[in-house]
Image (cartoon, rainbow, N blue to C red; front, top):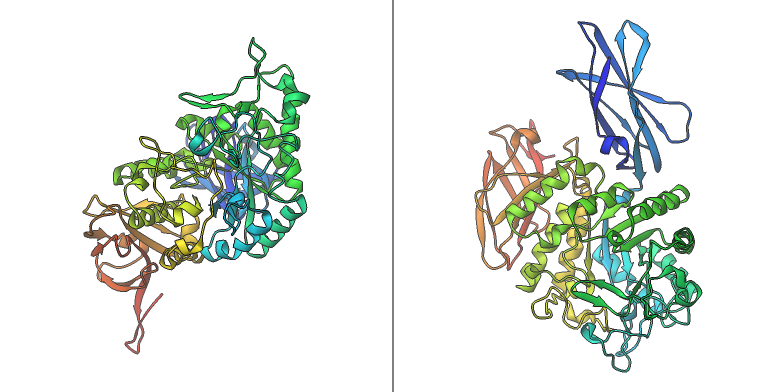
Length: 577
């Protein structure tokens, strides 16, 4: 008997696939024997560490292909394989030689809304350094907007040597706070808190208070130092030194980071270095942090991340790691394979209909979907894309809708995004007067209530519709206008069907005829049905395959249409389900 081409199987079974609690794992394989013997097969699965296998029957689907499935019910690692036999000789079984693995995460690994802000900019007072206690006061606003993860850039002491000034200049003025990513000074390093932010008890209080609002605090893991970090003196062997006795600072040509020193991962003392990084990570987990955004993981060894994430998740399987790696696609995908829970993507630079469809099809219709969980960010403190530079309200609304609805995980660098800030350093994708190098004072009166209402509506729509809490259920459909992006998401049982039309043109009204996938939705060609716009509030009774849409970006640039089938009672009153 032959069992071959088992799917999903990543790189010959070396890497696991990913699922969340309650999801099904659908497994297919080619299973056949010589002659005309009757073949049977079963799917074996178990939680790693358990001795006994559970069984799920596999069904013949044609052309020697078989299919089966099982549901993962606990966080951790599951294993699965296949057994086949020739009926009636059931005692002579053939087992697939590999035990494939599934990493099972909590739901937030698949469905989350991130809001990034600098806690030092949370003070209501002008020129005053913000604190964790100040951050507590804005939690109701974050919760009202519908975000469930509040992410802070590094909260550690900041070095003074070669500290960067406003707009990343190499000279500083009195009071310049420096970049939070230049970690460490005489008061401490990666396991210390910037003294002006508050105490560890203040952080504990903020984490607890955020939880009351349904929000988790996420921190930045940035394994790099300022030149004043205590490690420079206590562990000089962890760094690269030039022949003249100076330490090598970080570079990413043409950029230079004189204020930051990278660790030498090739040091002869790499084991002690790795153990220290593990100690840092576990320290913050013990303080109540369960989500980390990891800075530039592609500049550190793959083997290190595979080891660290494996070590951490063995002890704390609920931890979520987001990879901030804007680099070559194969590198980004490999980081996901070796353990990162979520990943930044190229969405930030995909603007046209063709670009978006091509990229999303790659993420959702290839093997990539089994291990790479995209997290869409229209902006970050480092990136203000060219598209956002070209306009204000419609541009920001369009990108927000695309990020939040195309992907089930998304985030924004919040304060500038809510205020439509798009001034850049000439010729670059970097914010002018970037918050990375100065303390801001963000005033709520700078935000229109209609903008906050728009953001909260989108997040409420996501929470109330299970179809939008997944990414791999995305399907693109036909519309006769290249300025309109038309796609759908639905739950597997079709109890929740959402069709979305987005006007990608922020300047002009666009219209077209959308082709409704009636047969997929179980609607007869002559059957009327209700298309309820969850975003705009309008309702349309549609009939037939083609229906007209028109979107003015100055009003609302998208329809988010919940489809309800139209039935008729014996009393001749219409109603919808």
